[in-house]
Length: 299
Image (tube, rainbow, N blue to C red; front, side, top):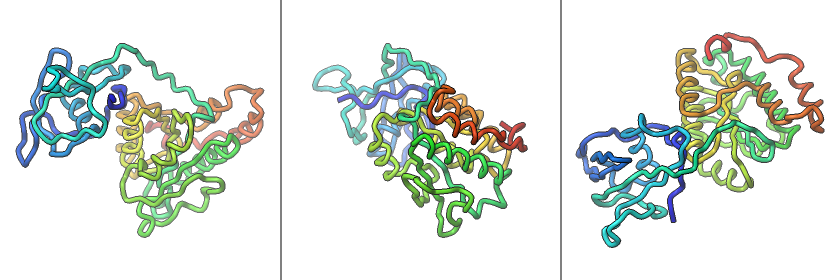
């Protein structure tokens, strides 16, 4: 069975450094793409995600952002490349290649309630004095959660080390939320979250908001696109302690094909038509415009 084929937009994230084997017990691997072949090393036991990151570090500037790929392993017994076996882990010297599929993909950014999940990331009490315009993003985040309840969209909320950083702020209404999970990992992509997503048929898109833009939001977005999920980051509902960190994170994420949008755009896209049975309720949510805070000039 072939390993899952990611688009190049999904090949984002940190990777093991490129170049010659770096010692320290690394396993030498020849990474091939098109007419190129570049040796590098990866840790013993490295799996699919590490290999994808390595291909990106070696060939990222040559990959088409809207193509899908399959990773193949050279099999001595067959004398040719075969699709990377499921669960493959590097244990010895080998040769891999990244093969583009012929299907061209276009990310349109369409949102529909049955295929969408909302992720609210770490909107916790201890962040209140540190995060720029925190009151504004709480207000917008609450609006998004109200919209999710109206439209029947599942919501997943995480709390970063709540023992030390406190629970989700009281202004955020947790009524009807599918999951509220503590975490220490920066990304929201926890095993429990992956299991919850697997239970929801047809999930294609995640609407992501919270803090901090350049840490937990960024790492969550990159992990999600690596799993083939389209990510919409709500710019007026995400912030950081530093506006410079926020600005460059949003720029980086947009370049990888992640959609940076606004709360009103998300909610109206989800209803799509003034004759939608829930349009009036959504319209009431957005009658008052989202706060035009200092976030506006720092997107």
